[in-house]
Image (cartoon, rainbow, N blue to C red; front, side, top):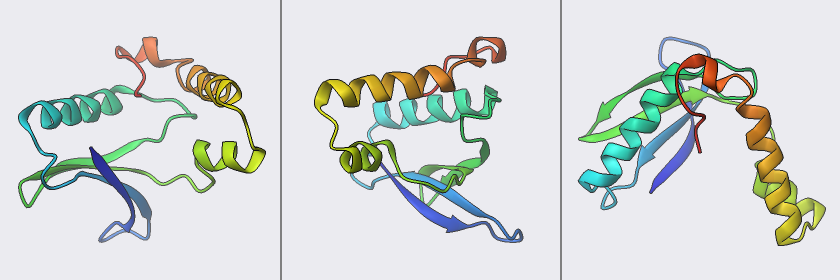
Length: 112
């Protein structure tokens, strides 16, 4: 659905994770889901969830600029550890639980 890029925020000395819907994948349903994700991110405040810094539209496609968190992705972590499918699901579940600790207090569900 989307692609995530490492980008620099103009006017700030800050790197961000920039998520944009891929051209051709920008159906009405996907754009609605993307905007919903952006709205949920805006309502969350938790140390284990990357903060939403900005959002909008560029060249007709919506984007989300999030706090860049350096480190390996969960897929890279699982690959390096050579985890089985069951172990990967367990690692993902644990990661999501840590990220959701305060989500209900913020008035919205956790992302992904």
